[in-house]
Amino acid sequence: MDIKIKILAILLFGGFFTSFGQGSPYYKGGFKIKFDDRDEKYVRIITWAQTQANYDDSREPSEQDVDPTDVSFQLRRARLLVYGQIVEDFLIMTHIGINSLNAFNMEAVGADGTPQLFMHDAWAQYNVATNHVVGAGLHYWNGLSRLNSQGTLNFMTLDNNRASWSTLGLSDQFARHIGVFAKGNIGRLQYNVSINEAIANGLDDRELSSESAVYQGVNQLGTANAGKTYSGYFAYNLLNMESNFLPYKVGSYLGTQELLNIGAGFFHHPDGAVLLNELGELQGENVNLFALDVFYDVPLGLDGSSITAYAKYQYNDYGTDYQFGPYATGNMFYGHAGYLLPGNFENTRFQPYASYNLTTMDAMDDNRTILGIGGNAYLNGHNSKLTLEYQRENFNGQTFNRVSLQAMIYL
Image 1: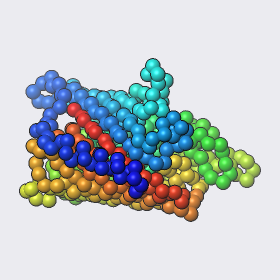
Image 2: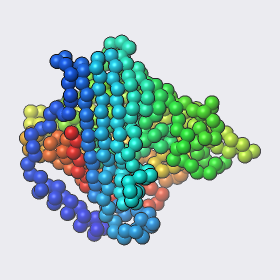
Image 3: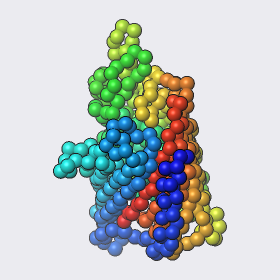
Image 4: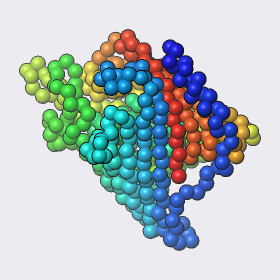
């Protein structure tokens, strides 16, 4: 770790542990407008913001020319989510916000910028039987793994494992598809499955190649061959039943639940990738992703301490020798674990954690590894917290170091 990282870490840790000695009483309730006494007619409003200070020694030269320092600030997320119902048989959800607003993508008059306000979710759902729901719209009922539907309100780590949002920008709009879904419980087994449209203007706009696939199935082959995606996730609850009222998976329950869930999921996009054959003709290749994961979150005793742990194996087939950003054909192993120190939420709580990602790539001899070490200071549970994290990434013969301090509030 060079001297700049050390200085920033000292400054951030100093503020992290001295400026917030006492927290406010634990947040309960929220903005919920009830229209009857049975809690069947209501509107629930949730809003949150995450702001960051980041040190990153892997910035692009163009960014360094504008700002020679390695420290930057960004609005990581600002969101507004509203859902409600007038009877228990149906519900409507809307979710809007912005992501990763910084000095290089802000707009002078707040228009036309990529990270500006857009629709994240908008769907309607219907109860078709006890514990079984169907719905349609722009939705987050993703298959594959728990982290592919990770909620952003209650991370344990600073953010999600980026490669676990495994189709973000390739077949969907920011991890959301337009389509139909079904979800529910069968005994202790929870499920969600969906059939969706694939985005026609995804991030992978590279030129076609005969050596490696590109993820441009809709543009190149047409929706008749590549338009629909299919996904599902199934989790068996060995201890208590986890809520699946909303799709957003909780990162850490802070000792309020006793859960051990084993999950498995898939994502299938026929002809989603494209390769040029030896004649220079388009050849579609199926995109197939599979994952197995385990989530464990339990209190350890009467002192308020708890442990949160997660582990996942994911097989990725994006096409022949596919590699684009965090996505690659190969295998991914990921895990994280954290320990909530004893205490109560009348005071600030601390939770150190560590994470590790190992990704193998068919297109390269080198693997990608990412080690994360950090900690949370819960000023008011997840509703007001600070997170400090150091990441060290090794990939393609290079090492990158990042230090981030994030402040988050949600109501």
